[in-house]
Image (cartoon, rainbow over all chains, first blue to last red; front, side):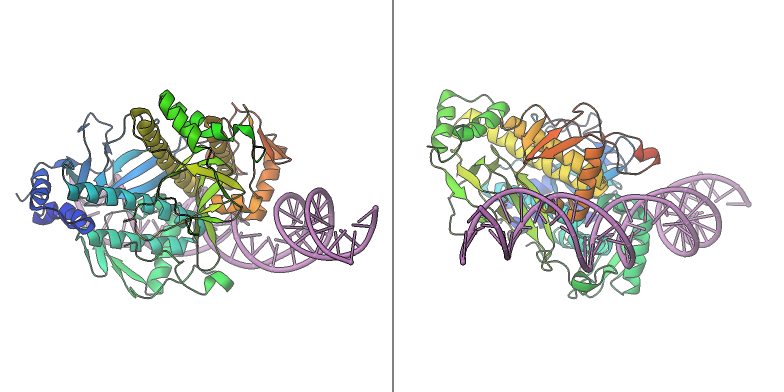
Length: 244
Length: 244
DNA sequence: CGGCGGTTTGAAATCTGTCAAGCGGGGTGG
DNA sequence: CCACCCCGCTTGACAGATTTCAAACCGCCG
């Protein structure tokens, strides 16, 4: 019982319930599923060990990442899986797995109840659509944003998503990742992530202490790196606004 | 009849047929659908005009791109839609459209036949799975590859995909895009794309004349930009290999 | 206390972007 | 038919962002 915080099971209901109205049966199914949690220690791979569960999974606690490793050691985190997120069962015909799913810190997962009814079915569909939108957001981030903008945009995405799962305060959230991991997600170097974070602290955009990030000026927008002219003056790019 | 080359209708059957075995009925449905083509002129948006077709579409000819525009003019092409590719009907509950689909050159589309049978259903599913894999490949490309590697990897992806649609030779394909467009896809500047292409020509990696790209050394791997050491010595990163 | 992982800092190298100008082909209109 | 223009490709010089390499610092745990 004390194994994990009491609210762990709440994330899926909070998130999926925000996507579609769930029947009492469906909520119960989610609650039941969360009673049979699987633990995955930091830096362990999902699906690599024999732990094929034969179905989709839901993240109850901790962060996972879809990771692509290069043969020379470079690493790119393609996407993050946060509490409440659904990990779809890998399709059998899927072309050779392009990526692995790795626990970025200690995590807890549970099986995703089958969508026998309307509510869950829709919730899963919305969840999948959001996942895809987030992949695209990640592409835009890597392709056209400066380091400063990338970090800023990423922090807000994480905050929005954690809010959905009921895992974030109005302007803060627990950040379990290392700067190096962040760098692997944003296509940067840990050194540069560090420097950029410092400049954000100087700009009074955020605080990061004791594993908790606090975003300031929630309304205000980001300042572009050090760039000048057309780009430098202001704003987070359009469409970077809240996704839902 | 002479409106468009005779083989235009072949792309969908070639590509989807490679994903699942299609019944004669299904092939006929595809052939029939391609008889009612919609044209979309270069730089026009899909779904923006009133041309909601009420269903999914298939690309018969030309290239489209899923594009994200920033308020300050920056542009990122998130993904490409080539002949034979399926454009899924935008879901109604989809969070505000993050992207637009734009014709990158003159294109021809046709409605996608409903998947009433096993074959097409699976073909569409595989197609969607591949699309997702390609999004991830794009993320890895933007996040961890040098300009030289990005272009190289991208060219090979296009070649592989065009092969599926029967639209590429064993080592060449028609390239309808401008270097500027390529830059918007790879998160680079047209100037830098130009210089990098030249260095690839010097390295005898490719030829690009008269709108046709010829890839040399198909087997051989890329040389990293000008980097030295661990990375510079060689190879396209692992997993960059053919997807299927 | 020593070691370890993660964070900071500094200085220099390199990649990529910016600005600006020239070149070249293809199409259009006179 | 030719002048002209527009667009896309090229080139050069330079500025700026990000990486690389190396070392120091810090909190924490055994």
